[in-house]
Image (cartoon, rainbow, N blue to C red; front, side, top):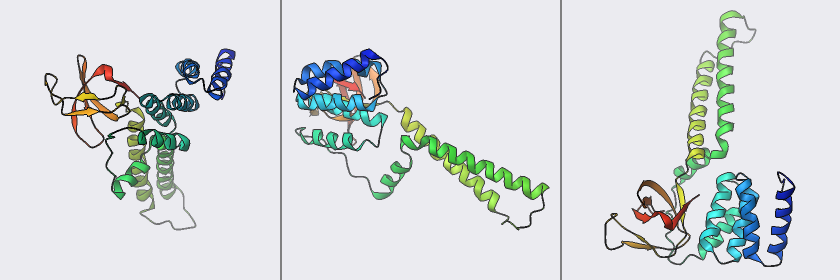
Length: 234
């Protein structure tokens, strides 16, 4: 880990030492301090998730593994540990398996690919303009296909569109985790009965807030209202 200053480095060494000594609650304190100062460091949140997992706080473990993946979606160890954590959630609400073309689209528009698509689109655009200029003002020894510049222009538009979608995924911050076990999900804010009890560690999407209540969407598509204090944004 590259610490920003000596204090961070000292806290990091102390947190790792406490973790190895199985003093997980104290390790959490130090990892949390570092995470506050280094909010874009995936390794810190990964270790914080590990400490919470060892401390049997599954909701917080899921939260921090999800935060790790929001920084680095390709962090394989975080994906594996998140899966282990989710297996410990009683009555877990499973997310339906996507059909192949939905998975294909999600892979194409991952947030980590935003810059790749943007640069690729820009390069295609410059190439199309270059070909148009060469055809107008320079006599080439090689005859280029007449539609090549149009094809490159269409490719630039397509890749820039992918860059836009990937960027939107990067900026989306509506994912949250239930931290209180058996949180009531209500169909309406004023409903006296709950339609479902949500287990700790449930990952969901927040849609709107109203006072102390938040409207959420579950992994299986169902919606309802939960108290704001029962969840934390990723």
